[in-house]
Image 1 (cartoon, rainbow, N blue to C red):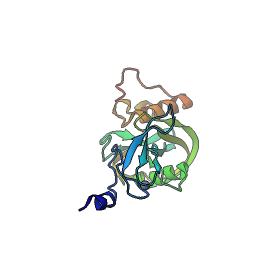
Image 2 (cartoon, protein in one colour):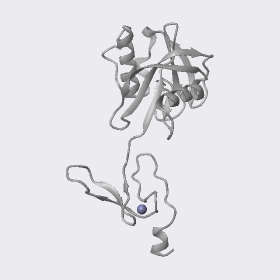
Image 3 (tube, rainbow, N blue to C red):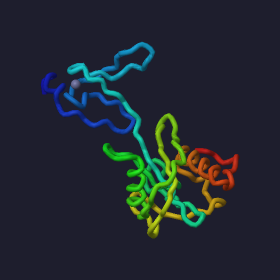
Image 4 (spheres, rainbow, N blue to C red):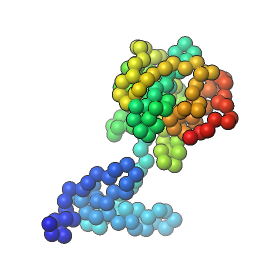
Length: 192
Ligand SMILES: [Zn+2]
């Protein structure tokens, strides 16, 4: 393959955490360049000049709540395999965050949920935008479906603080129990 052909082959999609090497518009090479003083260097296509902004993914979750208990699921995949989290997932293009939360609750645990007021927006530098809703109405019987090993309704005193999947899970549930006036998590629990 000649160098010219090599530069115009179909771009390989980056794996999670991998910096893209090729322009999604034309397949040209991307290179880091300083565009604006004081901002980070950006990936710029050396063929068409398009700037490739590495935006964070947005995830949306809902905490199903019924008769004083909340539903959590045990993840069957990494990251966080075997740990507990509320239903949720990435927001698709063209989808509202609340719609994504409703869809994920149906896909993962088979519940029909009407989202309630926002519990908050949580996250870490790795995954900075996790939008978490409370629930107004929850219908159906929870069962482990997509990416889920088990489901369980937890009374506030039973929340598995030492066994949560992500820092954002702990942040969101801490905010929820504060908002409800439920018992706060023990301070000595490892947040990993
Ligand atoms: Zn390009």
